[in-house]
Length: 152
Image (cartoon, rainbow, N blue to C red):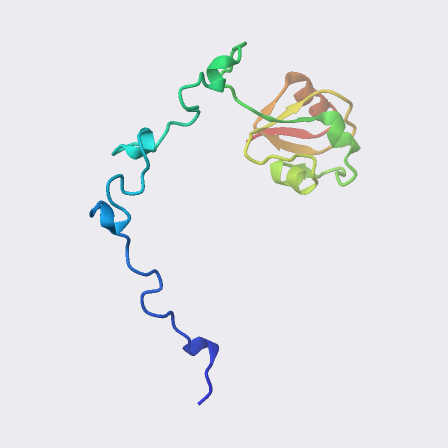
């Protein structure tokens, strides 16, 4: 019978015996038990630092100047102008333009944000646009071209 790869098993005790620490000076791992002398990592419960801890030095986040304000409740949008829709070659009269269509045509890059259509540019194709929000000028331009602006 030939030896095959599926017959090979892991040998017994691959990892070897665990090293017993703190069992006298003759064991080689007594006294400080491999932790060295002093410092946070030598203490029980030590060794886990908070992110940004620099060993007692003033952390970078506290050294650099702070400016401005970041609104954590800010809503981000995927923005498309009607001029961009006009230039897109795959959009014909009667086309339904929604977020998936724009992602497939690589006009939009991010799919996680809601879609907002703005009125910069001109549109002369009668298309149906489905978006989360329209500016007043975009809605007027789409309807003037004979299309529909549907809020999703």
